Image (cartoon, rainbow, N blue to C red; front, side):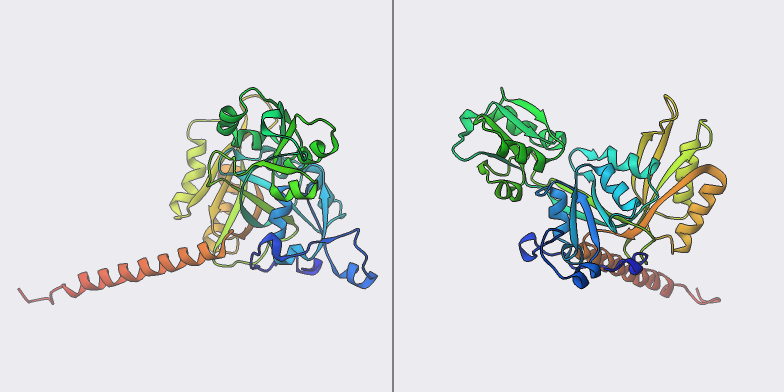
Length: 347
């Protein structure tokens, strides 16, 4: 991946974390090789689910990976040119959207989404070697991780004090640096190994289908792949009955499917909201372009967040195959109906 190709990021084949050895800025390397690699900032420190998501993308894993402490700092690092790309979480299947990511993209950044990455989430309780689960009185983790293990915690550690950390990896790092033997962290097995912790319990998330979506941020718009998504933010010009309906009708009238609709405060006053919308299609598709053009002209102020490939090539292929099969079946059905039309003058 090179800077000149930022407007057309190629699709990649996902790989497992164990299949790649990520590059670090601290590793020895010659100047020519360093110059050829992009810098990919991600929500750190090392051992986060975001790093795992990066490592599933073969083209990203071979770049120089730079852990950054917060989501806004990841985005600003790319904005200021100190990194070529940024990877941040944007949505969890259990806890919903990551509001700090949405707000930063909507109000503080001009970066665009280049692709999305879906990652299954497996959470573990980890602690310093020698700690038993009965010893644990304090559990550190990111608030989303705490929430995703609420049921397990109420059954196994109902009296434990929950302490918020900036990330699951930061929680693991704090536990590893403490001398206390009554602390544990909820996080990844990767982070536990990285910080020398032992797993006290595995797969403690309440929902086994738990997944988090991450986005790759950069400049420019990748070309259409045939299985794309477009993200925008709509700001109503005036608050009146039917204003949201008018926005949605622009999509419905053109047969554009909405994948997401979410309201967020505009930060301009109480009761003022904007709408985050994901729709099927790419800005290169004329029907999508016409919809956004009409929205901007008639209905709302529109901020474009990107047109980009949908995560999961296998799922994308399956959907395209199913759509094609359904279209062929419908065509045969219609041909059968038309074949029954009698010629004029025949009874």
